[in-house]
Image 1 (tube, rainbow, N blue to C red):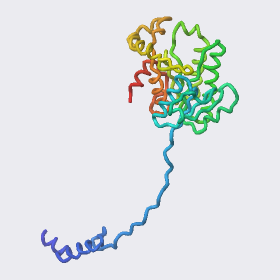
Image 2: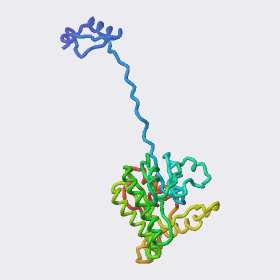
Image 3: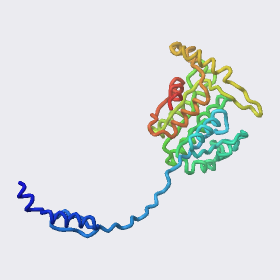
Length: 282
């Protein structure tokens, strides 16, 4: 074996070979050849576009729930726009200056559809009270118009702030609930894989009425702590749903924004207990 190695690669050949490597020449895959140094060409610079920034449109963004959603979305680094009948919010806080405020009526014409340009997801907080006819129109027809326009634009995700079932109270404000459920049905049809429906009960937090601030959390927070243990009683027919616990507006905002931008957030209906669970997740 030693003779075989010696005969194939003598010390002189080893010296010449490694000497060549030291002088900047390289061994080829062929043991009988020594290649010239490799030439490295300069790589071409490829310009890639910047990552897409999520743009969220909040319908009713200057209201109690809507304003908290706008703030939550901005805190997450999103581009945020709002569409409402009154346009720009009266909120005098720095974050409000970062929102693109649009004025328009979902029940009148098509000019408001410009607010959908460049939007990747929508959250609707549109709703209200009044006569049964008015409640159906504002909670149902207005939102159905928005869902149709968003679907035509190719928007992928639509979150709707609906309302929990309150049993006997449903019949007292029938137009309100009929409108909400009609919107849910339309959303399931137009966004079968991109819908999220939140059904909170009483939403508490600091609500602005003109220049006044109403700290509804003083009532809502203690009620939430007590009524969260009454979940079995909510199954009692007629009166049980009245015991649905209140929920913090910040929790609603957090889950709404997550539902709008998180691709793995499952489509479906989220009740008040789901709202609380999702809001505690990071």
